Image (cartoon, rainbow over all chains, first blue to last red; front, side):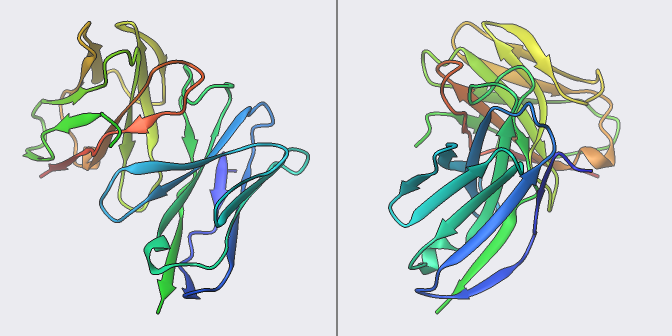
Length: 114
Length: 112
């Protein structure tokens, strides 16, 4: 079983719609969680950290369910510029890095259509 | 802007050759990590340096090695290049253990 699993998509979504995608992780010792966004042929960029209480940043909401080892990302009122690959990331350490490094999923490809 | 820059942006090498990739981090970023991202995959952790010493390593063979310098720059060296080494190589740095990593723009290596 892969450490971090995501549906690769693509998710084709009309502009203005709400879209949600999930990821699961296998290592119950994981302590910190993130969503990164990666545009085609660019580097990953931190979108948001994910906390157990859930957190929101504008149109983006992230949720963490430790019992089910499941992370979600919800995007409301989607924009054309949201088209990208969204990478689910977990880490055994409480920090953003750590000696074990970040463990990335393969990413979910999102296409927002006009 | 993340303040992490990598060079070169693209590189073509022949199987069996050696390559050095470079990364420059922001002042004060004591931690630097390197990742390999093959096409269609997520980034894979190669290793991490903290204050010029390797303090973590992923599942990569010894022909992948690195250095970190006092001026917050670092290098990734790969010896005996193989075709499967073709990938985007990403450097990421952080000011401390409590801060998320920020990635540089990457070096795209093609091995022919």
